[in-house]
Length: 183
Length: 353
Image (tube, rainbow over all chains, first blue to last red; front, side, top):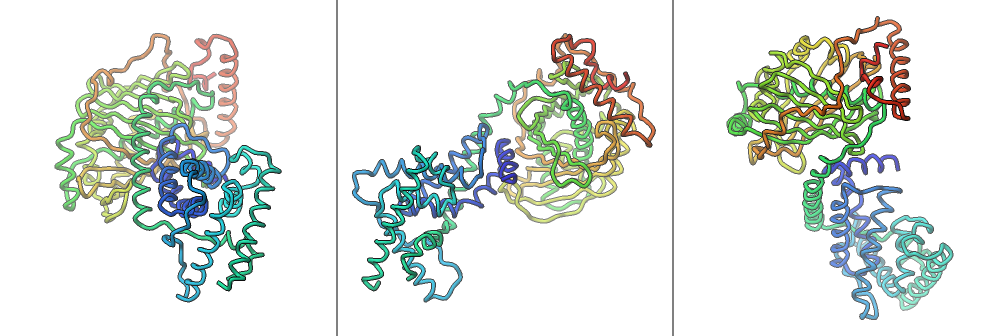
């Protein structure tokens, strides 16, 4: 946290290296978050880019009260929600593309299995109601606390917990169906 | 496939890595936006004058003195033996008469990893007229404005928060060195006393060639301050190191990094420490209003008298100095609580009382 505050102070002075450090440290995590929220890599990239552009635009007035991780995750969630609202006419989120889902340096079989598993999980996430998906993704991907998520969603703590719990149950059901189909 | 009851873990394991193309494009857009934001912010910095705390005053003065030292040692040169990049840089900077750059300064006590004070300065330099330097604190407050006036051979420093000013003579030695505080002099510092080539690197996203000053030039820096005994008492410079970064595409300097080690001085409360500088955001040959180089001392500002400060004996120096600083701070606080500041805010001369 203290490191983040020092970095934030450098950002306020317009220090390009500080911005690059923040960018490098969080871009992958935010992209993962956005892909999970939107289920669309191209849209997720647009959102993440907008997050960092907005961050740079507010350089002089920027005040960090928590961690960069939580701040940027909140920005990503807010922008992703705007995107979702704009495309609300569509009944479901678009199923995720496979690019650029990460494949670590593993064997080809293991990598293929993990990739397939990720696609199933993302597809299941995309079928959740937006609020539940957001609560789960911010909690597990953004590593945010429930009270922080409550602030982002502007609802009570108990509502966030409920969304999280019901969302997980629904996900579990969806994934069990996939297992039962022997996929 | 892992069992669905491990669903939290499954989501945690979802990973995503930005493609190199996206990573580069988004970074570039962010930095372009940052440049715009910083450019838009500059005028507001000019208007920012915030009241300083008492303790800030002494440190503001120490920044100034350290800055003087830095100014002298990293700008002051003439070309000699050097590579192609440096030769081209000498040629290109000869044609430049004005420049602006920003500078980040951080002060560390000896043994500390974290700075106890940081600030940002903006420098406006004219080969013919001299230079103006504005030092801002960490919160954007204006700490001082320093004028190095070539024609009048004066160094004038205004401290807005306490309405005080310094008016020092620009000695021949410092005048000569200050003369090099210009685009023309910048590159030459490295060659006057020799330099080491650092090779290619990246500075603020640009491909640059690095050069490091030699040990001989450090001696020249320290000797330049023999003209200023008060500086040696306030903030003695023990050693210095500096690196200049030249853009390989434009052959113009784009950055300077420097480090000063200070000995025991009044303004560092007789503690040794380090000052680190990073000059960046160079603008070459901008239009500068000549009026900005004329010191404008407001009529309600009172002069500071540095000559009257005497160095206490080495032993017990801390014991002697700390109460004086504390007394100064207390008196300053009293003034700010309602008494007139005219009589007691004698700045550093308070230390004499």
